[in-house]
Amino acid sequence: MNSQLPVNPKEMNCLFNLNQSLATSSIPCPSQNPKPFCKTHNRLPFTVPSKRRPAVSSLNFSANGAILPPLRAFSSGFNRPRASSNDAQSISGGSSEIREPSFLEFITSERVKVVAMLALALALCNADRVVMSVAIVPLSLSRGWGQSFAGVVQSSFLWGYLISPIAGGTLVDYYGGKVVMAWGVALWSVATFLTPWAAETSVLLLLSMRVLLGIAEGVALPCMNNMIARWFPKTERSTAVALAMAGFQLGSAIGLVLSPILMSQAGIFGPFVIFGLFGFLWLLVWISATSSSPDRSPQISIYELRYIQNSMSVPSLSNDGTNSRKVIPPFRLLLSKLPTWSLIVANSMHSWGFFVILSWMPIYFKMLYHVDLRQAAWFSAVPWCMMALVGYFAGILSDRMIQSGVSVTLTRKIMQSVGFMGPGLALIGLAMAKNPFIASAWLTLAVGLKSFSHCGFLVNFQEVAPQYSGVMHGMSNTAGTFAAIVGTVGAGFFVDLVGSFKGFLLLTAFLYFSAAIFWNLFSTGERVEF
Image (cartoon, rainbow, N blue to C red; front, side, top):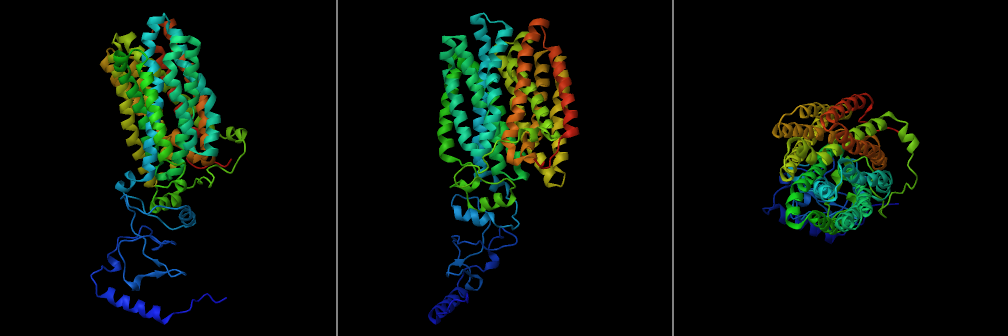
């Protein structure tokens, strides 16, 4: 079949006249155009609007006569061309080399908006859970609770957190992070908002609300991992996780700092109502402004979509928004691999240390150093701000190491070693501190170095098993929740029996060192075949 189109002499004459007029005009020549975004293909397979019309000699005509201008540089402005579903299919089929975006292009991109919303969700997640860490002191005094029962009330959150991560992680792998995160935030905001009513009604209802809070928040981190795996290439994931987890840590600081202030103005239960309402506000923005994957986003530019899809190894969601692989995850096969167990051990140790510090630091400063509640909240909040800051720079360092040629496996081992060995040494110093200022310095160092774990095991799920990152995270979170329950409740009984936190801090330091050894022996940064 002859593919040549017939030539119309009138059209050719028109083109000749157009060429003569453009050649004598002041329009810049094609060589003055910006550097092409794609190094090996100078034109898109579809029409892109352009403010400049190049000379006819450089025009490229499609089969239907449409003019195809050169692909312009990645734009960071608001008037960028948007990608349609057909564009996404065309882009995903390409294999051309794409340049790295600049810092300005990165911070104004759609994927950074997604990670910013994730950071806000994690901030609310942590703020809602730490309110009880501050409220437990006046609640215990007003109701005559001992340290043991106070530990039970605080650990009741973990009972719910134990139930949901595996199921939630599986749902995240199937339906994407947007839907599951929306349901999670809605439920934990309801639980937070209703906590004052439950506490005034009965202890059983109070424990039930804390369990519901734990169930809902159990999906938060698997959703975060899933969204980042879909929106960010490997060379940007450590930074993305660091940004999201910075929100998580700042949520601790916000909850610990604002809760005493709000309690002094609105009563013991004021923070629960205010934080619950903020969750509903976040939910409205999340539903209207984000998508589960780049190819389903109506706001993303074609240039950013092309960059993401040419750099990704994780498949996007199908057109109906669900994953076509509707099978039960291979739990036995996942558990038969040592890299899986390195993730489980790392998450367990991370959760043990995190929840012990989160739940008991206000009480620790009040008991040991006789610091009042407002000052104790400030002492407990400063380390979390440091964790957010150090975690961000750790993410940048981790990505730079990978970009410079350091293997992913070595990078993850270095990051996680700092994240475990550093806090272990700092906790020994905390146990020996003689005054609250030195103790706060050691605590700040311990929590700050702990953030290196976010560039170790926390981002490793996406590398070891990208297709099962949600359920893998859920499995390790369940094991971590067991460890957190033992640590939180055990700390309370330890204090009742011994009357001091020092021995418990030394035990935690020993566990940190042991987990670091296990991680370095059995972890990997490469994809494992399941």
